[in-house]
Figure 1 (cartoon, helix red, strand yellow):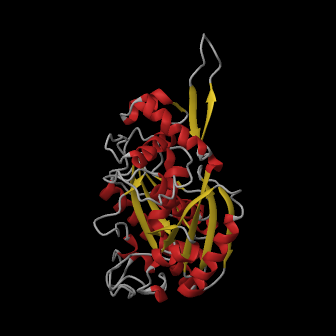
Figure 2 (cartoon, one colour):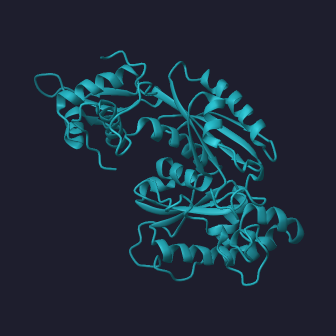
Figure 3 (cartoon, helix red, strand yellow):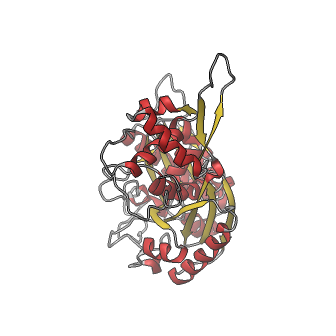
Amino acid sequence: MSLRGTNQEFGRPYNRRIVLEAIRQHGPVERAEIARRVGLTVQTVANIIREIEELGLISGERAHKKSRGSPPMSLTLNPQGAYAVGVHVTPLGIEAALVDLAGAIVAARRLDISPPGPEESFREIGRLVKGFRAQTGGRLLVGAGLAMPGPFDVESMSFVGPTTLESWRGVAVAQRLSDATGLAAFVENDMAAAALGESLHGAGRNVSAFYYLYFGLGLGGAMVKDGVPLRGFHGNAGEIGHMPLVPDGQLCSCGNKGCLERYVSLEAFQRRGPVIGRRAWIAEAAPLLRNAIVTIENLFDPETVVIGGIMDDGLLDALVSAADPLPTSVADRKGRTAPRLMRSAPGQNAVLRGAASLAFSGVLSPRLGQTDAPANDPLFARSRVA
């Protein structure tokens, strides 16, 4: 993102977010450096910083004094300055977490409702958020992000089959989430949310371009470039689980035959594993996973492929191990600084952190092309600075 402030008359809310984003990206950072990066005067930046400090969103520390005068203050985000709620809804249940500005999970709850219908889900999510709010110490709770299986708005694929939330067709998810929680609400498919969480807080932090391969009940993924998941024209890029890789294979709920997730996914293991056994299923699925990874590498040329999701960590580790060695692809080159495959952190924290990051980004980050903000701006409505 290009961090440039605006001198438009009504651009102050946008400039506040630009300054906050500069501190998030580059902190600890001094005021003069912020001003240089965002193209605003030092005095304008100083005024904005006072407002942000009053909200408790940032903290500062002065360097040791080496000469006359007061040394400049280096600014960073205050992790406890604000919180967001991340929610993950799958056919297996609901998981929710209270997440701070640094991406740390402060509290988490899981509800084993299978499958979760929308009415019960939003009622329970509202109850969970009420409990989380009591744990913020009165700090700003900026919003809630919800991750759920995709794809979205595809008649033959959305809310169809055992890997989706079949009873949620036609539900205005963002509006219902906002009504249930009283918060700004944001919705994303779970694989893109997981990729975002991984880019901010996981194995993807130290690489500029990676593909996140997500094992939910189904199988999907997202290419991430410079911290941004690439979503495609309709927001459904990465649905590799519906690539038909087995000629005249098993019928998929999408209507095609031989789709990858019919063989390589948590749902595939739950259906096939009890019949042939864990080891045999891994041996059956590994060659298809191997081919999928090579396809991803040849299509996207990522620095690495990160694999994670809600599949049992031991099972996923065994499957990844069985996929080795990988065939030749454009990724098979000398001088690599990252392995071709990396495992994400255990569990589904990447999804919850990514879902919460949707709220942080939607409320705290500058919105390109929008320099004004409504009168009830959720970020600065409480600021007492004129």
